[in-house]
Length: 336
Image (cartoon, rainbow, N blue to C red; front, top):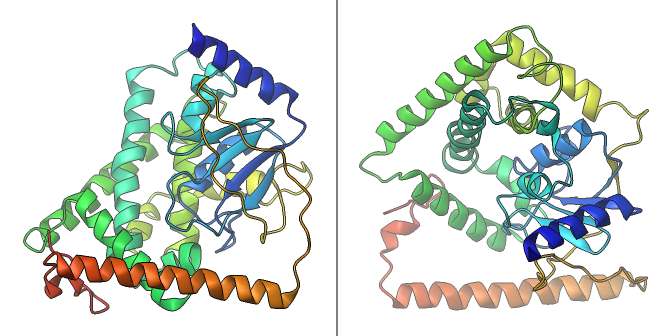
C-alpha cells in the first residue's frame, strides 16, 4: 500500500512540477547528449512530447546514477528501478506503451531485450574495448586531468571486459559472438520495422526510444571503421528510421522541448527518502566565483583525486596485482 501511495504521489508531483530537468552528460558529435545511456532517455521524453530542460553533469564521469530526471521534489535515477524509463513507467508517470494494447506481448518484450542486451553489449564493446579511447574521452573524461581520465578509462574498460566475459584466451571468440548477435539483432529489427515509422503500430514505444538512442550514437559517434556502424548501415530502413526521427526530435527547434541549460551547471546525486521517493533540495542562488577561485578549486580537486588514485594504486600493488594486468592497447591489458 505504501508503494502505491508513493507512486501516486510521484505521479502527482510530475503533473504539478513547473520544470522538469534531465541531467545527462554533455553534448558531442552533433547529439544533445553523447552518452549512450542518456540519449534513449532524452529521446523517450521527446517522443512523449514532454517539455524539459537538460542540464549537463561533468562532476561524476563514471557514476551510474546518470542520467536522472528531476521533477518537483522527486528524482528518477538511472540506477534505481531499472532506469529512468522503467521508473516513469512503473509509477504510471509517463508510459508510451500504454497506447499499445499489445505492448506486453512476447514480441515486444523480446525485441526490447534484444536491444538492451545484444546491441548494448556490442556498443559497450566498441566504445571501451576495441576503440582507441578518443570517443569515450570526449564523452566522459575530457574535463578531467590526463592521468585521472586515463586511469578511469582503464578501470571502465576492465569492468566492461569482465562484464562481457572477455579474457586473453577467448577474446577473438567473444568478439565474433558479440558481432554475430548484433548483426542478428539488426536483421530482426529491420524485418520488424519494414516501411513503418515505428517498430510497433503507428506510435512510439519505449523500444523505439531505446533503439533510436542506440542507432543515433552508432551513426554519429562511432568512426567509419566501426564494425557495428558498418553492420547497421547495411539496413537502409533502420538508417532512414534514425535520420527521420533525428530530424523530428533532435533538430526541430519549433517545439521548444528539450532545451539546454548552461553546460557548466552540474547536479549532484540526491539521497533516497524512506517513503520510497527520491528528493532533492530546492536550488539556491549561486554566488558567482572569480576566475582565481575557480582555478584554485579545480586544482585542489585534481590534487586530492590524484592523491587518492596514488593510494589506491599502491594498495593494489601491495595486494599482489601483476604488472601484466596494466598492459593494454595503450600499454594496458586486461587479465581475468
